Image 1 (cartoon, rainbow, N blue to C red):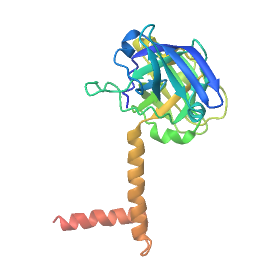
Image 2: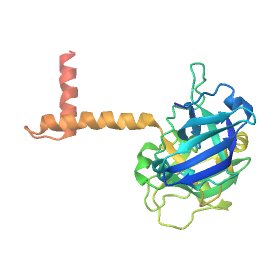
Image 3: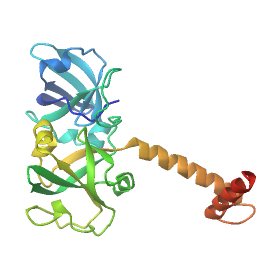
Image 4: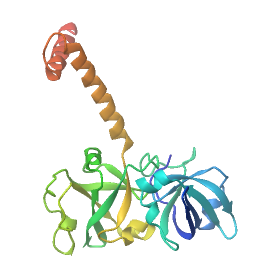
Length: 255
């Protein structure tokens, strides 16, 4: 479990690819390995991986990346000297400055717009799998390359939706491809110095993990509604009708 507050930026110093996957060696500031143990979880660009070896001096560690992880994330596009966001797993005394992040990437998204807004930078993302958009809400959380960020605008419109800051004049806007929906986040000046995403351009990909709370809510509501449908299958009536009937019954009983 992580918080989405990136602790530091590491650099890929070695990258070995075989048919079984990829091994990454990452250099890091010394503090990140001050309490490291073999088998510890660590977030690399928002992907939860396991430390297989580490060296305190010079500080570096190694992780293995499976073929499935390479397919689901942008880690397969890393090269030697690439920078990555790093965060250690939460501990009992960690402040929850961001939100609950599992390190289980849901999809990758492409940057389709970048624009400066004062000292801030607005980025627009279009996901590879559009169905994740149902979990992205304005002012909600989304994890981009391991960083917990606030959604400032979102559009589910398959045609691309209304123009936003990152899609309008004054910056690098839409790519012109057929729309699949999008969302935007704003990076303040401080955050731009702390995450690798700020240095990415239109066409680059990022790892995306949506807020897990939305997933649990959806599953719970779906189960409840499916239960109502099952109860009503013998006597007719839709889900809304059954919900209204239950509310009325409770009101009558409470009198």
